[in-house]
Length: 356
Ligand SMILES: Nc1ncnc2c1ncn2[C@@H]1O[C@H](COP(=O)(O)OP(=O)(O)OP(=O)(O)O)[C@@H](O)[C@H]1O
Ligand SMILES: [Mg+2]
Image (cartoon, rainbow, N blue to C red; front, side):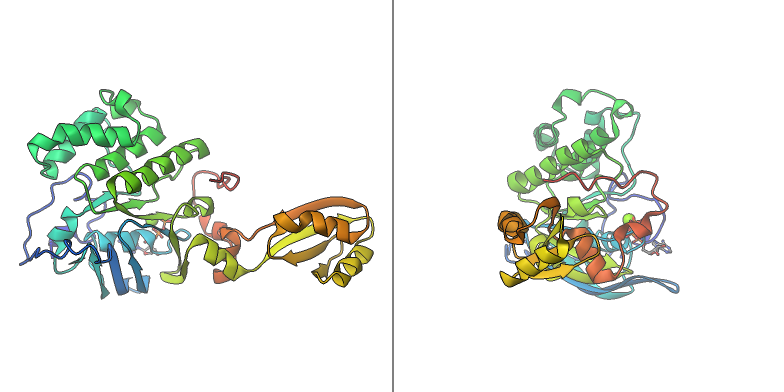
């Protein structure tokens, strides 16, 4: 294992420093030629920092070409997991492979196959966008004859061609983040790790970034592993692992996770809630009568709302259809809201209205 890579604070071997030559005896025998190999395979992976169990025996697989999200609050163990998968932090238990290579025994092979966008920005502000990319191309030994073509390609993927000659110091936060993603893709990685790629960005920029990310998957076939604590953002992923206190508490597609939480609800406020509830119950609806309103539990609230209003047979004051969202999922699996862990965030968590 490369000793310089382990827990050395902000040192950044993937983002800025050269990838160091392997000090271990690695074989890169054609593991990745087998397209069936999972992009990421993790078995009982753990990391302890003294008494702190940052990651506790997590197990999951990510298929090639999948967009996979780790969703969890501050301190859940998201970055620590990424750091282990990117060979920057040594696991204290378990094992993991990336594109078929073992992160502990074959760290150099793993590094060749990954791109990484750190939670903290790592671009050189005093260089232009293109210079940042050229620097990275040298560090990653992108073949000289391919460099121009790759730079053109990745700038196009993130829609920054027009700004290539501008200093990064003149970029907005969103543009800089997209340039970091472009840089992570420059050496054509098999797996791209994005640690909170949209943190602090406004909803429009986040939507643009997601277009970029999904384009990378479609056009370059890259597998994407990202972390986020934005519920709405996790919905873009093919599958989500909800991580809390170092453990995966649920793992499935966004739709399946929502189904596990329960049915849609239609909440009615009427001129006579009791009568409305009784009328609806007679029609076979499952109804709960509250003090100010009644709640009807149905498979598909949007489709049934009209029938429910008619079936209540009383004047309606207010109607609210609620479909379980990932907030409900998080609450269901952890017993608390994801926002509780966000006191130290420097920006507001107000992005829920932004939807695909
Ligand atoms: N180098 C370290 N030394 C000691 N403890 C650490 C170290 N890195 C992380 N931890 C601890 O491990 C736990 C998980 O941290 P991690 O950075 O993985 O969380 P996270 O899910 O990425 O959170 P955030 O959303 O804030 O980025 C935390 O309790 C953190 O304090
Ligand atoms: Mg983190």
